[in-house]
Image (tube, rainbow, N blue to C red):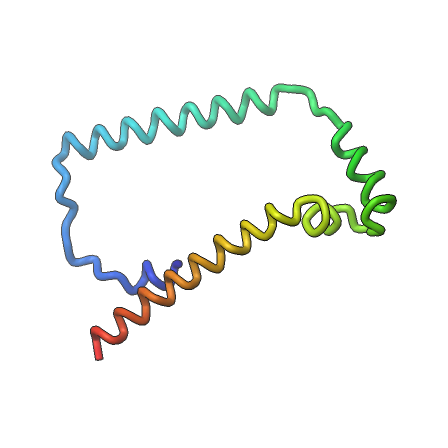
Length: 107
């Protein structure tokens, strides 16, 4: 994705007015503040170790694995991991298509 961004032209100026830019900045600041407050409130809750204990005990008994992190990724959260891989692959194909389109236009 970064390769695509580096190859995009930066010729057009920002068409927004100063007021629109200020409004965008205020919205970004408000959302950043809310996200920070949510994260801080989540950190204020005491840690519950029951989930960690479950995965530590179940990784060897149910999945025959000693590496708890690998067992969680491959066995317990396999569909979630597959979805993440699909997103990365889709982004790579999209970047390849954009770069290929630009290369044929320049040739």
